[in-house]
Amino acid sequence: MLTMRLVIVEREPLNAETPPDALAEPLTPAELFYVRNHFAVPRIDPHAWRLRVEGAVERALELSLEDVQQLPSRTITVTLECAGNGRTLLTPTPGGTPWRLGAVGTARFTGAPLSLLLDRAGLRPEAVELLFVGADQGEVEPGRVEPFARSLPVEEARGPDVLLAWAMNDEPLTADHGFPVRLVVPGWYGMASVKWLARIVALEQAFEGYFQREHYRYVQSDDPVEDAPPVTRARVRSLIVRPADGARLPLAPVEFSGIAWSGYGPVTRVEVSIDGGASWAAAELGADQGLYAARPWSFRWHPPQPGRYTVLARATDALGNSQPLSPQWNRQGYGNNACQAIQVVVGQED
Ligand SMILES: Nc1nc2c(c(=O)[nH]1)N[C@H]1C(S)=C(S)[C@@H](COP(=O)(O)O)O[C@H]1N2
Ligand SMILES: [Mo]
Image 1 (cartoon, rainbow, N blue to C red):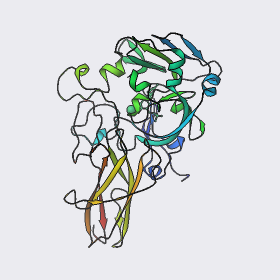
Image 2 (cartoon, rainbow, N blue to C red):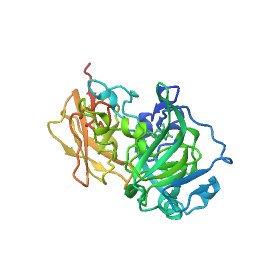
Image 3 (tube, helix red, strand yellow):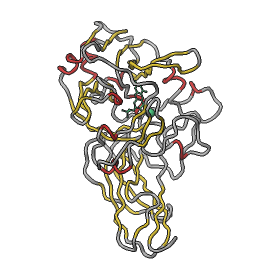
Image 4 (tube, rainbow, N blue to C red):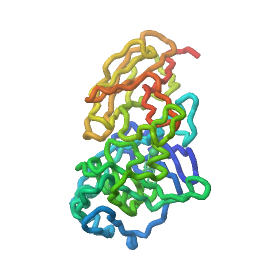
C-alpha cells in the first residue's frame, strides 16, 4: 500500500491518475485520488478566504470558512470521474489531457448542502443558472485569461445532494482537491465539481465561459462546438481492477473484480465476457455505498484450458443504460464509457 503513487500524466499543472490498485478499495485516499488541474493550484489563506454569493439574489452573502463549516452538513460517498477518462482509447485520439483509465476516484465528501445557502440568499425568479467560479485562472487562448468557472441549471444546483464540501474522507480538503471549499455535484462528470470555490453567481442568462461553451461538449462533426450537447452526468461504466491487463495466470480458478458506476442511477447489473464479447455471464455485486458511489463487483472463473483470453466487463444501470462495446468518438474525447477489455494468459503459453 505504501508504495502506491499517483500516476503522473502532466507535472505543471499537476494532472495525475489514481493508481489501479487503489481502485480496489471502497474509498480512494486523497493522496491517491486522481487530480485534474487546468491551471496552477491557487494558494489560499483559509482565514482570509471568503465565499461570495451574488447576482440575481435577494441578499448577497459573504461567508468565511467557519461560516460554511457551521452550516448543517451532510456526508456523501461520491465517485468522481473526469469526462476525459479513457480519452487515449479513442481512435483517432483527440487532443486534451491524455487520460488512460485512472481519472476516477471515490471519496466521502462532507459539506453544507448548496440549497441551504441558496435559500438564505433567496434566488430571484429571474435566475436561470448558478455559476461557480474557482480561484484558479490562466490563459485559455492567447490574450484571453479566464478562471475555471462552470454553471448548473437552477434545478440541478438546488438538488439536495449538491454540496459545498470542506472535507474529503473526514479530513480537510488537500490543496490539489480544492482547499478550503469545493463544489461536489454527485452523478456529474468531475468538471461540475468546481474546486477552490470563490464566488457563486445567480445568472439571468446561460453562462458562456470558456469551460462551458467551448469545452465539455459532445461534438460529433465540424459543427460549431457551442451547438453540441453539453457533457453532464457520468455515463454508466465499469472497470476491471484485478487481475491486471496482461496478467499471467495459472490454470486454476481466478476471481475477476472491479467497480461500476453511473451518474444516471444505481448500477443494477455487471456482466463479464471471457471470450471477447461473444457471451456474457452475470458478476456478483458487492457492498452498496450509496447512490453516487461506485459498486464493487466480482466474477469467479474456471479457465477451461491454457490460452490467451480477452476479458470484458459491462455495467447496466437502473434506467437500462448499458456500456457500448466500442466507444462513441467525439472531437473533444469525452464520455468514453466503452467496455474495458483486458488480456490474460492462462497456463504456460507465451
Ligand atoms: N477550480 C477548478 N475546479 C475544477 C477543475 C479545475 O481545473 N479548476 N477541474 C475540474 C475537473 S475537469 C475535474 S475532473 C475535477 C477533478 O477533481 P480532483 O482534481 O479533485 O480529482 O475537478 C474539477 N474542478
Ligand atoms: Mo475533468
